[in-house]
Image 1 (tube, rainbow, N blue to C red):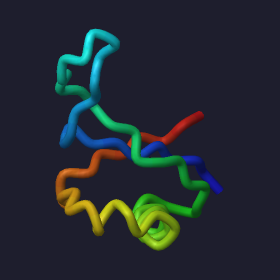
Image 2 (tube, one colour):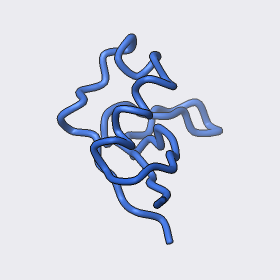
Image 3 (cartoon, one colour):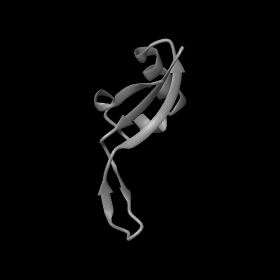
Length: 65
């Protein structure tokens, strides 16, 4: 099995000086046989991703070695 990191450019965070900063958001790590299975597992384990209306089509993934 491989380990995958899922992330998105949607969203922002707040800096220590209370300003909003656009950046990438890590959505999670999943260990699975392939990317499609890993994405399904990510969404199954983290319903907040769809509840907060992240665009599933823009989620990016990279295999972690």
